[in-house]
Length: 397
Image (cartoon, rainbow, N blue to C red; front, side, top):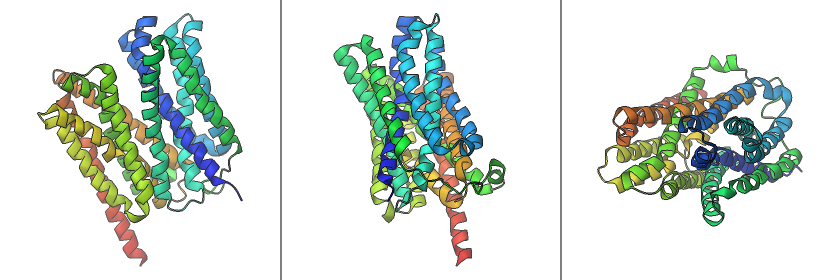
């Protein structure tokens, strides 16, 4: 009998790999600025390149992964992630232009990260696990624990060995995807739908509920990343903390509460209705944004930032689960387009908050106030999905 727990372990490590790819380089931004003389404007492009590459990979997956095959694609994701991280340790010094070396490395592991993002969820969805919604939530919690581990372990490493040892740590982090190459090469992988039976992009586009899911995913990504990416700056500006403590109190605790939310649903999901849990989480998200944007007490504002992680935890995996149930033959195209929508939200959310903050004279509370639109629209989309599900259930009786 196939050992699907091995598949689950490989997918857990896949999300940890993605967390390393997303969270490690930002810890080195000031080091790159000082050592290689790269302007802060160009430094900001590193994150843009990472997320834009993931978006392109999402589109690529929607068209070509079924033709290439899941195993080849997921093994390639780990190879590229490991290669990109190793390149980051050496290419900036080997090439005449250090910035070009960094961008090439980031692009390589961003391709790997994008493949992981699209492929891991359908691989787990196709396995014969009981209570898929809870399993999906627990799976996505490993991205959170990977983020926390990357930030905490890297911070501790730099405190002990100094920032100049960053290349050694980069190679150490590359061991995670390198080891996982074997896991994905040997674990059982079941096709998400039978060959030729999966829905294409055009078929999905004709379904109004699919566009509701896309909108839900954009809002989920925006609600999560708008707060996560500004949590450190909020902690520094509102509480006057150092960058290190700002990172630990802001993004790190945000990721912890997000992971706790996913673990809770992963453990008790069979007793909780998913849409109800998501609507309740959306209401908590609105409350958290209000705390961060209106509260005159900076500590209350920071608490809002941190617990926003708990409120958005179920949004991404929950939307995937709802879509999988609504469109059982959605196939790779559906997972890829949902990932693209989440990445799009994750790109525009922080950008809008940042732009409004700048226009408001660097008042981050005003930026957070505008961020309220994302969880509000998210709740509306969930209500539409709940009404549609109730109608379908009534008609099938």
